[in-house]
Image (cartoon, rainbow, N blue to C red):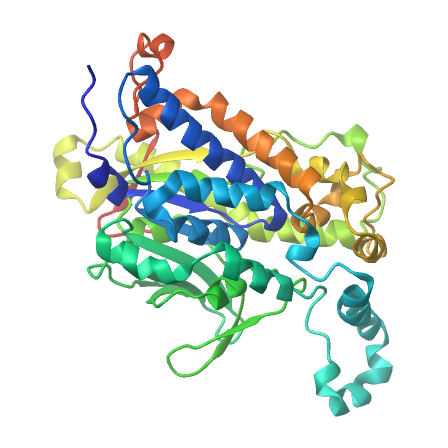
Length: 438
């Protein structure tokens, strides 16, 4: 019979990183649900009880990923139930739970914002006289604040840290006031803040305001004010200027890191025949979607590639020299979409509320061009509607199932009988300086 692993030790140095991506974060929930199922199946097939507690001691996230990470961390003592509760929200999502999607809300935020942008030259003096009427964003995300109060019981985090059920929770945001990228973390007393060029960490009691700040997509949602040493600062989405998404988990003590992406890492290239001709001038929606993809997706791919290169270089060093160096291996597993999420979103534009669809239509998003993934890229971040989120969750399940044996090896779970004969192969490892590297 297989020996039971030391789950308490394993969880303390195992981290989960959930990236940003607005509505695309539904994909993460499908991955998480499948992790829960795989763990149960693995131990059931081995005739062993499922280990208690969470497989992750460190949870980090950015933007919508920060919200998912915080929801799990708040119930880390009942991880499986926490995943089920988060999945319930995403499975039955409606855009109105995140931002004002009715005609009045859209007219008072997005429509007014676009109007003032186009007529600003004529209204500049009037706007100076009416500062309270200046629009702050395309959409009003006050409904999200109400959802967070129900979905994320952050008051439990200090208790779970004290009990040893949680090593750390970290969320990232970008300061419009200082230009710095800030990781806010709450966790074990031994954890120390860090500082690198243009980014640093700050120990703080994480609140719903931090989650709103981390998920404030630029131009789309309003910036959030947070109290900081020296005075309040305004923050926006943590994916902006995030050059090293994996850094926080490593600084917080991770030796194993599961990264769940939201696009591009394994997506197939776009199908040219399914889009508008290449010589067609891009719409505002296409430009905005491309910019968001650069903000949300590219930094992770670069960070993973960087880690793989460092790992390859470290493999050339003898074990003796490596032991004397400041480098340590980090076991890394990445799960990312195998299909293009913007193409998937194109099929669901019609699921958006009519006022939101009309506003996006003015930017070039059309529900008629169901194959125009370029025009739907912007919508892929705003489609908080059940038909789309459920399809993303199903894709997350399929992609995780396709890596089932890698997942089992990464966590040290018993392998399925057919796979065990092939013998274990170690999870991909990357190197990082001891004490946190990147």
